[in-house]
Figure 1: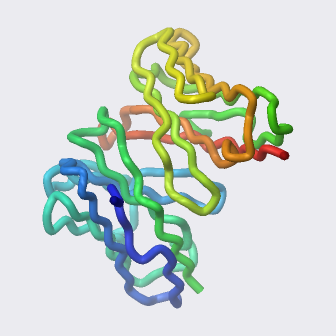
Figure 2 (figure 1 turned 135 degrees about the horizontal axis):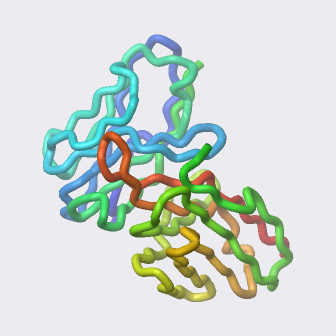
Figure 3 (figure 1 turned 135 degrees about the vertical axis):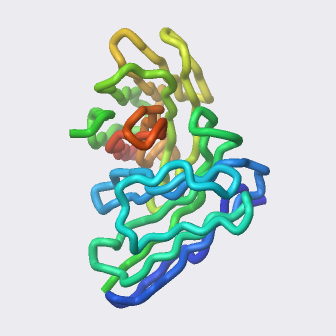
Length: 113
Length: 113
């Protein structure tokens, strides 16, 4: 049983395209996150949602827009993809806030050509 | 510079040898998490340390938190090839956007059979 799942696992696309990555958690958690792991393996938070409300929004370009239709889902939509967006994107969830253990999805490797 | 520095950045050990990975914070540590990332996969939660002097073990992996030194260490005893991967420490840190989980740069571990 997958606790935090992401789709797709791999995404290869051209510059300028718009793409979405989906995340779902079946843990009953209230808080979900999106992280970006760059080529040097640095993992940095992008967004955090608690009960469908945005609570953390790091310095991320407006081209990135998270959407949470319900507390079990947090999707990431990226407009006008750029080469620098190539990275692995991880979704995570925790019971309530950042003080709770976060459980990560398997990651989505995005390659922008 | 990273708020959480891990050392070493990479490590190659012979199977059966012990090893230690360090995580040093530039700020006071309130909670320290250790995760393992298998190459090309998601993050697996290992353990969380909250109190100064706290020590936790899981199978052959032991982690300690030294709050005074703002440091945590992860020790693997009698390493096995299955221990190979990237070990990431994460800590709750406060910045302009609020409390969030900030990660170190990771330590890449290879275990030679």
